[in-house]
Amino acid sequence: QIHAAWMLRKPTDQFQDVQMAGIVVGALLARGIIPDVAAVATLVSSAVRCGRADVLAPVYGMAGQMHGVAASTLVELAVLRNQLGVRYPRMHYDVLGTLVRSNDLQGALEVARAMRSQQMYHVLLKMWAAQGTHMSKTNTHGYTRRVQDIVQIIDDALNTVGERFLHSTHHLAITTILGAKHDSSCVRAAISVHQKLAPRLISPSLPAINQLMRAAIGANMGSSAFSLYRDIEARGEHDSAWHTSGTLMATLGEFLAQHEDMRSLVHLSTVVTRRHITAAPQFYTAVVCGLCTQPLHSDHHDLIRRVYGADAILRSMRKARVPRPTKALHAVMYAWAVLGRPLRAQHCFAHLPIGDLTEVAWGILMYAFVRQRNARGVLAVLAQARSWLQDTDNEPAVTPNVSSYLVNMSMQALVDRGDGRHAMILLDECLERFAESPTELSATHSDPITLTLVVRTLLASHRVTQAVHVYDDTIEQFGVHETPSLL
Image 1: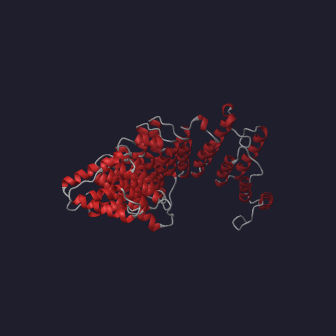
Image 2: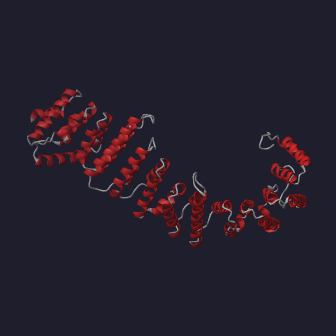
């Protein structure tokens, strides 16, 4: 014992002496003898300086070194490690750092397991994550192995530590797994870690959850992202999540809408409107616009069903006195216009705020009648738009060069009805009105769409010579490349 104490108190930096001291400590523990704190501290510091923390196996019970040791000795050894931590606060962390630098994860886990502290596991997680930051994103095998290591650290911590974990551990684990790659395998690993940690957290890291939801959406795993939201909603943290991630909820709503997950989408929208959660305007816009956008390979009836759903969301927002974004109202109006439902479009138009009435809104309403091939309705909208533009209260909303597409659509409706004569009369009338008042609906000879409608009208009246003359002038003035379809 005297010889062992001398070796421990006065070791050199030669690994042979430090290794021998570690062997002596193991022999003492096997005989039920606990070395004093100063001797073990000297051994630990010397091992760290040599970069060989593996010689500390007897101190931390690594690699099966504690077989055959009495239970009372193990208790005294645990007290000794705690005393080391109190007297030398950095010592155990230095041992962890040495093992991490040696890529000895199992040894580091055994040290953390011996200390039975969530702080030790957090430091180990942080060190191991930093050890892998140099890895290239293209090193798929190395990155996958690093993710597996992070999962192993979390699993070991959950099985060893009985106390609750801080949100910093949750944040570190999720962000480390998602740090370099957002492919489906990494997202699934991060979701697994979150689900394991969530019941043991004092409070979750909302930024980490936001990042995880974004990664899930980016990996085409929107249902998993919605499940994450339902999880934090069940824990009573949905309000703060919405306040910090309105744009994220907009992305989630848009994904659910595009993938026709109507049940999840309705739940998400209902939660927002009924609980008066302050969600970003982008959320409502994304949800409604996503529903009103017809996906590929979908039929007419499917679009009708989706637009009815968007209309229902707008109605629930109105009942809950939630401001409805103008873009969302325009999207529903346009969807009804495409479906040829002018009455539905008029209903949305009637709920537009006075300050949001623009030529775009009038154009969408007119297009609904164009799709229905209702020329009388088109001309009625044109007359209402003229009255609105002439109203002095709307002058600030009128630009000096108002586009002429309302006039063009009206001419289109008349031409399609075979009434080219009234189409030309309408054009002449608009030209005279615009010359008298700049707030009138504009019409100009230099608009190629207007000129195309004039050509169609002339051809319908069998005035081919004049039509060719207008066509040639249009090609020359605007430099349009002639194609067989134009000819």
